Image (cartoon, rainbow, N blue to C red; front, side, top):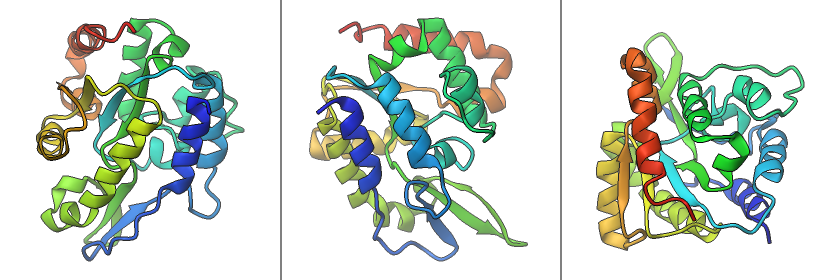
Length: 232
């Protein structure tokens, strides 16, 4: 099987059975009625992963509502899917701040095709979460924002990491996005020994939201770390 075939099967298998704390809901774009995530993610993986090459994993926290939460491709909004990946989004549009940084970084390393031939991006928890705020507004939520949520989804996360490795991933090094995310990931890795090394990178959302004027510096940090041992 190609990497694309495994990745598409992985997306279709994602299902969170755990009972979540009150006012928190899981987002599964691959199973929601009316979602086009499977359509567009299938096209994406067939285009960039239709081979048997192994990749290194880059793992974020969990998908957001306007990136992977609707396109099915982590850190890729419809705007970047169309303009950077060359995929017709059939009129669908969305803007996700993290996607802006990720694709600026990818361009600094080379072409989109070359990048995805070496790396597979997903999240430590491949399904995202939203929480209801006063007034009925639903906003993004991270798996580590609530201790009860983390304990509920930890088995799902561990199983997902194991299966992402089985897609065809190297285990000598894994890249982790976000300081707090890396703390949790290192604890999990210490317990299960998935990877020899976890390399932390600043989270794209943090960079865009708080360090936009220093984006070039962070792009260089990504470039240095990703190219440090990834030319395989």
